[in-house]
Image 1 (cartoon, rainbow, N blue to C red):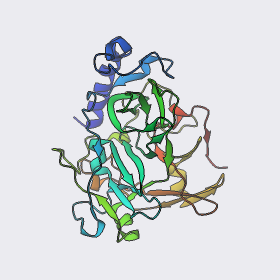
Image 2 (tube, rainbow, N blue to C red):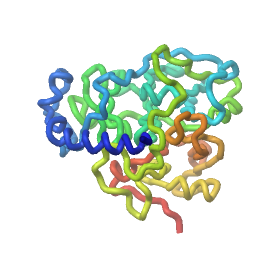
Image 3 (cartoon, one colour):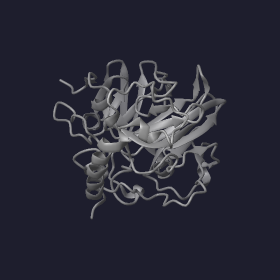
Amino acid sequence: MRRSSALAGLAAALAFMGSLAWADPAFWRHEWPKTDFSITAVGDWSEILSGGPPKDGIPALINPTFVAAASETRIGGAEPVIAVEIGGAAPRAYPIRYLTWHEIVNDTIGGVPVAVTFCPLCNSALVFDRRTEHGTLSFGVSGKLRHSDMVMYDRQTESWWQQATATAIVGTLTGTELAQLPSWMESWDQFRARNPGGLVMDQPGHARRYGANPYRGYDSSTRPFLYRGDNPPHGVPPLARVVRVGPRAWPLARVREAGGLTEAGVTIAWEAGQASALDTAAIAEGRDVGSVRVRDGQGRDVAHDVMFAFHAFWPEGQWMLGP
C-alpha cells in the first residue's frame, strides 16, 4: 500500500475518534496538567486532533552539534536544508533529513535563541526568535495537529503554539507571537557552494532512518492529512506549494514558470536543484521543486514560507495569481 493511501485511511479513523474524545480538553488534562485550557484562541476544539505520536513522541532537539560544511559527506546534493544567516555568525544549514524526524531544533546563533521548525504535513519551514516578553522559551512537539499543521508547546508554561502562524493558541501565553526570522530552504549543494566555510547540523544521536521520507507520495495526495477545512480558492490544488510572504501567497508553479517574480515590494527568486522532501522514499531522490529566496527592495532577506496550508490560516489572504 502506498504511504499516501495509508495516510488517508489513518486520517479518517483519527478524525472520527478526534471528534469523539480528543476535541475535549478534559481528555488532554492528564497529559497536560500545566496547560490552562480555559484560555484559548481556538473556537472549535474539534480542529485539534492527535497526529498519532504523544507529547514529545517526536523528540525536539536542543543545542545540537555542528560540523564544517566542507567535511559533511552523508547528505545528498539535492536534499533540502534550512539555511539561517544571523549577523556575523557562520551560516548554518539544518538538513530536512533530520528535521523530518524531530520537527523542532532549539538552538542559539550569534547570541540569538532560535527555534528552527519543519512541519512535513504542510511543508512549512520556519525559524523563530525564542525571546518573548515572557522570557526565552524552549519548544517541544505536542503531537497535535490543527489544519494539518504542527502544534508546538513551550516547556515553560506548556502553552500550545501554531507553527504556521508563530502564535500561541492555547494556555496562558495565548495571543503571544514569536518573531519570524529570515530563512529559506535550498539544496545542500546550493548551501555549501555559497558557504564553503559554513556549518551544518550533525546527525542526531537518535535511532531514526535519517534520509528516508516516511511520507512517501504525500505531496501528490489530493488532500492534506487530518485536514477538515475548505480547499484553496481559484482552483489551486490543496497540496500545491505556495510562497507566503505575510498575508500574500504566490503559487510556486507561477514563480517557477516565470523564473522568479518582483511584486508587492518583494523579489521572489527561484532556482532549480532542490528535491521535494515529501515525494520518494529517499529524500535525496525526490523530484526537483526548486529553491525560493525572498528579498525586499534593498536586497535584504525577507521572512517567508513555502507551504501547503495557506488558505486554512489566512482565509482572507491575498492570492497573487498574476494578470
